[in-house]
Length: 271
Image (tube, rainbow, N blue to C red):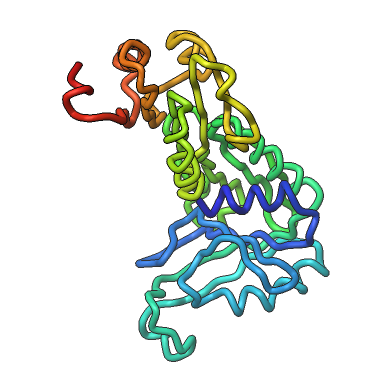
């Protein structure tokens, strides 16, 4: 969820910050290539790229990067033989290459656009081209199985390009807006799902009751079409009306969502 939290903070705040992205890893490391964290001027952080080994050093670099207005790459050797240097034995390891970028101008606009795509449930690739300190940014559709990686075999990843695949949060679709849905909705939001609530009774669907959720009413077929249900979705059927629940389940069967749950007794579910 770190990438989403980073993007959301960037979209909602004008606060100066530095984006730290792991762009290279050798050996064991706490986070893999593509992990990102936002370093704030007040010492705050959004996300993480280590279990605490690097954050203090990275935070000290924030004013330098912001003053220069240019990205830089820093290298860390966290292998066990170097542990005496860092004084840490908390799960750090490996060699890491970290790209530090001031969040401003083109990068800020690109991150905000990426956030809009993720909120719409669309995966994108954040692409950096050029070589630091002169980087260009772009978003590309993340079709196929595009993975985090760099184009060049040697040197800094930014010499040619570095692309990070940004995945939207998984979506939980809840069919049936009875009162017993409220605690499920709240818990799912805390866990980090994107939320959608559907019901054949439009009067039960309100933004005040379900803040931030997609709200859709209609028949099972209309709901599936409006939400563009797919195999990536998680679905809970809790309409508590046998015919309506069955219609929704029949609509879901050919879609094969990642998860389908039905609220009710086992005997009722078999019906």
